[in-house]
Length: 90
View 1 (tube, rainbow, N blue to C red):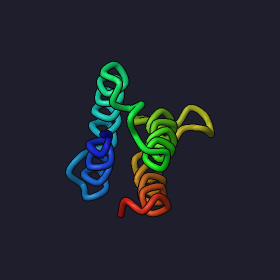
View 2 (cartoon, rainbow, N blue to C red):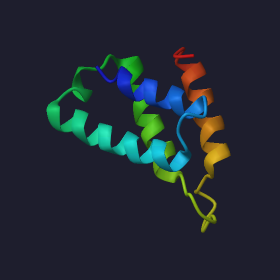
View 3 (cartoon, rainbow, N blue to C red):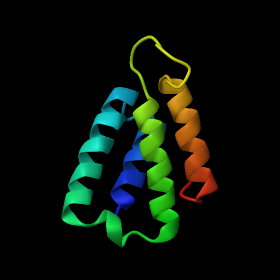
View 4 (cartoon, rainbow, N blue to C red):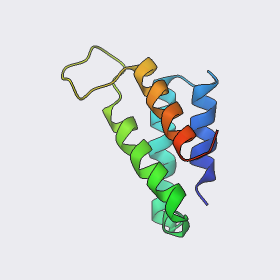
């Protein structure tokens, strides 16, 4: 199951990972779990949470924002924290 991605997000929130490291590892794990078929086995709640988190990670920028759709590390933390609370993973 993809709870490893939730654990990765928790590590990001507790300061163990930077935004850049979190997004890099998130996409690596997403590709790996997708290729192996693990993502398809997630329950609906977990799948919905992770799909939204994917979008948030995709909006992250480690540098200056070039457009309104980009978010910085602090904004990413706020969004991920809210998402994990909404889906009751924290």
